[in-house]
Every structure is written in C-alpha cells, then in structure tokens.
Length: 165
Image (cartoon, rainbow, N blue to C red):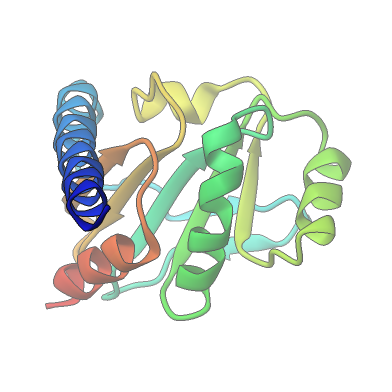
C-alpha cells in the first residue's frame, strides 16, 4: 500500500510539472505576437467615470480580461491582491455595460481599476488574442513581462518586484 501511494504521488507531481512547463511554453508562444512597445497611455477613464492617470516613475501592471472568460474570473482575486500593493490598470474587453462590470466587481468585493473596452479597440492596440493577458511595465513604461493565461499571485508579485528594480 505504501509503495502505491509513493508511486501515485510521484506520478501526480510529474504530471503537474509537465503541465506547468507546457502552460509556460504555450504562454510564451502566445505572447510573441503581443505589442511589446513602451506603454503610451497617460490617462484614461475608468468605469466609475473617474480619470486614471498612469503613475510616473513607477511600474504598472496592465491586465486585459473579460467577464465571459472563466480563466479571467479565477485570476481576478490575484489581480485584486496585487492592486492592493502595486499600480494596476485592468481593461475589461467586450464585457457589457459599465453597470455589468460594476455589478461583477461589487459581487466579488473587487476594487481594482477597470476600463470598459466595449469595442475591443484597446485590446487590439495591445494585439491581444487570448484572455487573460497581462503586461508589466517598468518605471519608464518599457515592457518587462507579458503573459497570456492564468498567472499566480506570487508570480505577479515577483514580476512587479523585478520591474521595480
């Protein structure tokens, strides 16, 4: 019995390692088409009609997601945690009205900054083809990291820390 447990544990660990490697390879492949230019946004209006001015001399995470995306919903709590410690701007793509997005935010106690990209214009400017997609820019607004798909809270924190150096 003990040998079976060891064998199954080893198989499960191996499976997760292989899946993690494959997920990172897929993310790397998908992120190769993204816009890798410096961030040109300076200010933008959020769903609460307030004007958001991008911070000067500080890194920022730009997270592009959608209400209809199940992976985005799973990752949203990671974005919330990060937004409590770092500059975060999120862009909700083709996700309905501001009220639809506000309701989702309230239901889940999320407070991160959201822009409603009703037509998908901003997402196309970033050349996003899959959701969620995350960009991390350094203090000079140069792209440091981009990622397509789910990213853990710790993965995001480490990348933001790196962008702060």
